[in-house]
Structure formats: C-alpha cells, structure tokens
Length: 202
Length: 202
DNA sequence: CCACTAACCGGAAATGTCTCCGCATGACGT
DNA sequence: ACGTCATGCGGAGACATTTCCGGTTAGTGG
Image (tube, each protein chain N blue to C red):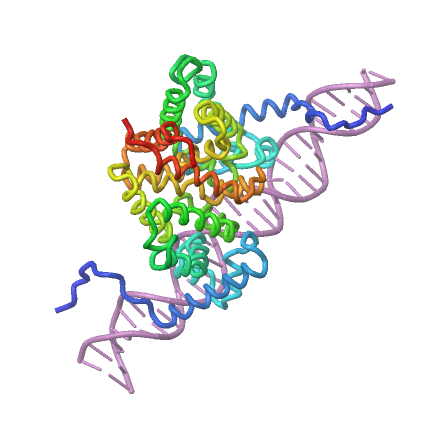
C-alpha cells in the first residue's frame, strides 16, 4: 500500500539543493558587503552564486526572505542573548528591567542593520511580520508584558512597542529628522515606562 | 538686466499641466474603484487618463505620491474634522478625550482605506512619512500630548502612537491574526491611557 | 546495478516602475 | 501679433522582480 501523503512536514531538502542554499546565502552576504544593501539585485546574487535566478527563487521564494535569511544569520547570537543570556537581558532580572534592556538592544540592532532591514521590510508589504524573528520578538515582549501588566492585551501591546522600531520609521527619524540614537532609546523608555508605571485602567 | 533666478517658489503650474493633473487623479480614482488598488499599474492609469506615462511621473513623481493624492482627496473632510470640527474630535474637549477620539477616528480611516494605504506606504520606503498628511497627524498628536505631558518628548511619542497604525501592521493584525477592529482600538486606548495616567517618570 | 519519480535547475519571458530625451506649446515681454 | 524659451508631453528603453516550463538529477526500492 502506498504511503499516503498525510500532511506532515515537507520532505527534506535534497543535497544539491542544500548546497545551493548555502552558496546563495554566502553570495548574498558578499555582494551586500561589497556594494551596499540597496544596490543588490537578485540577478547579481544568482550570478555571484553561480546558479540561475530560478534557483534563488525556488530556495528563498522572495527577495525579502533572502534578505531576512542573511539578517537572521547575523543576529543569531543576539536572539539567544535575551533568551538564555545573563541579566539584565536574559532571565534573572525583574521584568521591567528586562523590558527596557530588550528595547535598547533591539534599537541597537536596528541601528546596526538598518539598511538591510529596510530592504527586507519594504518589498512585500507583510514581510516583517511573517519572518520568524518578528514572531520571536513579539512572543518575548508579550511574555514580559504579561508579567508586568497581567490582564492587559499583551499581544497588541507587543506589536505596539515593536512598531516604532520599524526600519522605515527608524531611518526616517535618524536620517531625515536627525534624531540621535539616544533620543530614540529615551523615547522607547518613556513609552515602556508609562506602561509599567500606569495604574490600572478605569 | 535679466531677472536673477533668486531661489523663490517654483513657478506655478501651466494650465495644460493642471488639466492633466486633474485628469490623472480622476482616472486613478476610477481605475482603483473598478479593479481594486492592488491591480493598478501606472501604465493603466496613464492610458485611462489619455496621457503618457511620462506625464504621470512628471506630475506626481512617484507611485506612492499618486496614491496619496487620491487618499488625501478622499479624507479632506476628516482632516479638518479634528482641526475645526465639534468635540470630542475638534477643539473644545479635554486633551485626553481628544487624543482618544483622534486615535479611534484614525483607526477607522485606516480600516476604510487599508488597501490603498498599503500601496502608498510600501513602495518607496520612506513614503508614509514624507506625505503631508503624516506631518499633519504627527503635529496634531504632538500638540495634544504636549498638553497632557508637558516636558515629554512629544515628537517621539507622536511617532510611536502613529506607528501601530501603519497599514502593513494594521492589515496583518486584522487579516492574518484576525483581530477585530474593536480590539485594535482598545489596544490603542490602553497605550494612550498609560501615557495619560502615568505619573512623572523618575 | 537499474528504473523510476519527485525535486531541482536554468534562463527566457511576462510584467511593472521609473528615466530620458527629442519635440511641442503655453506664458510673457515687446 | 510675434518671438523666445521654460515648461510640459509622450513613449521607447533601462532595469528589477517574479513566473514558467522543458530538460536534468538525486534519492530510493527492487
């Protein structure tokens, strides 16, 4: 009897496919480093990786997903700094303190990867939210908020705290309006501080 | 002696140019109404308006600016409802009440124009913030916040309150996560409420 | 070792945005 | 009226993303 295609996980990647994935990722990182994130075309990445464009799309599906793959690769260490690392970012500190530390760290990584994030978040409208890292940050924030303000709509508030760190707003504040990074962090502090200190809503 | 080109305002639009601007705006609105905002190409708008693509770009510069022109046209009345209209939206109500009313109204217009806003905000990364209406909302919000929390960085906080209403996040919450509109409004209330009720920061 | 199939590959083509530039024309001084 | 010229017009073309499909190949069961 044939194995029924019960909806399990999709079959594992073939060996050549996995090799190409690594090649493409490497090539993308190189091209980005060489010519800046804005000047990168899929064609160029494909050529640098020695594959056809079709292959890039088959492996990554999307321009945004390719860029996110590069980003995730770079900030893997940040991602578990706030999950497993030492306080105040990691567990062990009081939730309000962790919340602030997390927002500051997030502002720093946004500053560091701003151009790249802009590319990734812009292209298909929902891109930012379907990427795994957004879900991770959202979950973490919601968890902290739940400890600070039980009973609040922490899922919504997590989105609301992440929203001002969207790359397009962040870059507009930094470059067009000329806000220093410290001011952005202070603003986030004010917002988070209000959430922490406010008495129960009527 | 020749008139020196002292940097004054750019010369007024020629009559034929103004006519084309109206034609294009009209055509854009029609095409959007007929086939949905997502299915609209500049080529198509140009054809419907009876002009060349070059003309569309000369008059509006950008896909996003064209779409914003359509949007602004539609919400002109909303824009002066909170400037000149009756309370609680317009002047006359207490700032906290006005703040809430404003956020609710903004959520409603985002709901109403969501697809259109998504188009407009997505295309060139900074589009949302360079449009005149963003500046208007930002200024209004900053003014209200200044009355509620003097001494705070109201310019930053205004951005932060506008950020969760970005079309891409809003649509993700509504469509992908299935949040009802009321929940979004309640979330905004919670955020604004915290800002209103919080004691002075340490 | 062989046959078979699902996954994979490459690059041409479809589609869309935006630029460029030769030609036309409205606005204005005389 | 008429000459001058900045402004405007149109559409071909440069360039980018994404889809499609005919031919190839890795993995597997016998």
